[in-house]
Image (tube, rainbow, N blue to C red; front, side, top):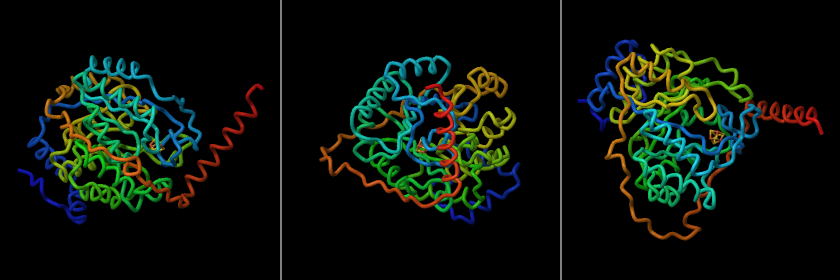
Length: 370
Ligand code: SF4
């Protein structure tokens, strides 16, 4: 039986990371079977409930307002539209829905109330519900839990050291603080990272070390492969080799045997054979639909074909995944206010992409008919 209480050192994780790949996949597959049915895959539907126009400068993200990426911006989606998209996804085999909003942090008010209504509606549909809305305070996390939310996603993205080369508008500590706030409520934590951003192997291991330092292991860990988008600072990054994705999934599974490892962004860059190795190595969840927020994703039919080929079936929603709702203590506004930071250090490639974005918008304005 895998030792789930083990605290791994960086050297130990590096040692398993460097194992011959076939050996690593075999080890991870064995551990995966101790806690999961290897023939079941959880299918999640990701709905972008508010797209683009984000004030942050995340170097990988086409939704940052400062970069010019040509995505279609959308205000907060009406509750009914979210529910109908979820209904359709459920018919197509999804047992989980994740709502993503391009916000720096959750702000109390009309928009947050609307999100709470979405959560209430979705949780009554017998689906697992997850949100990714940016930084969140403890009382906001509790309100989400009370509305019926099960998971909150907030990725560490990468190691603390490399994070400073990707994002300058918020700190790694704020990420940890958000995860801590989520954990203090009854919500489950979903947190992982992105590979292929130019990080070193040490940074990949650093991300896992960061997750290991949380009060409790994340209940689910998305592993994303960067999808380089034109106009973003990371537009010229080479597609990360599929072998790196498989290796990262296997190592994540060995370090966090009980967590659901999610094969997330970047699946269109992989063959079905590559994805099969990821499932063998311990990935047990994917996102469904032809779009992952704003980047491409294989459609439902492609995934159905892959599942049939591999003998996989989508999981049903687990009854025990419903969050235990705590009674929230009344808090004053000042108690609930969190002081989020804005480091503002210089990241050359982010500044360059911002300047290019400004120039592109100017050109568009000059060439548009008055
Ligand atoms: S990753 Fe999230 S916070 Fe960062 S720019 Fe994109 S939408 Fe904003």
